[in-house]
Length: 272
Image (tube, rainbow, N blue to C red; front, side, top):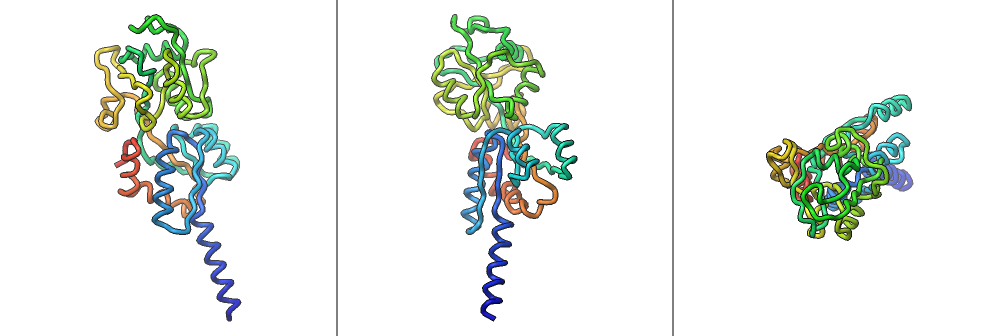
């Protein structure tokens, strides 16, 4: 009888571990909010384990295909070829929007340029505009920083701001958003782009115009919510449909009023 009780307890422990041990990987943009969500979730649910790592949206989706993560964080929609590869492997991805993010263009705090049009940003990041004096700044070479090609932020910026034109040859690709913040803060001629939650006093966010210079809007949560700021995108979680019950407790928490309050606190826009 005693042996039966021990075995039952072990089985219950294994079941609990399987259900509540989550691996989450992918987008650096999603990283700060997911880390905070995971910490809060584990505090409320003792004995649970949620491991969160970055690396970029493409890395997360690849990990989901390979079965090495339960949830892929992504700051872009899953690509058609990624979806096809998953289907060929007998896997069906499910998409959930967990927050929205404003993408901010940042420069060194000493840079006197405060306003840029979308067309000027396209010129800078494609290499047509090479000096700050061309956009009303000092006679100083522009040093452009970008995320790596595996990043969803890289993809979104290319699609939304560059209108699918290629980044310039030799653009300085950074492995993580924090590296862009650090590089821009230390380089007077620098420009880069980051998620709204990453902005700090060491960099200066630029006001952006999508109407050829008629109006310039600051990247802020309020302007993102009222849709006056033009560079806003959804943030996604992807998981395998067959694992829905496994990931449901954590995703439900992220989408709850408590979880969405964390989204807002970190600096992103809640879905509701």
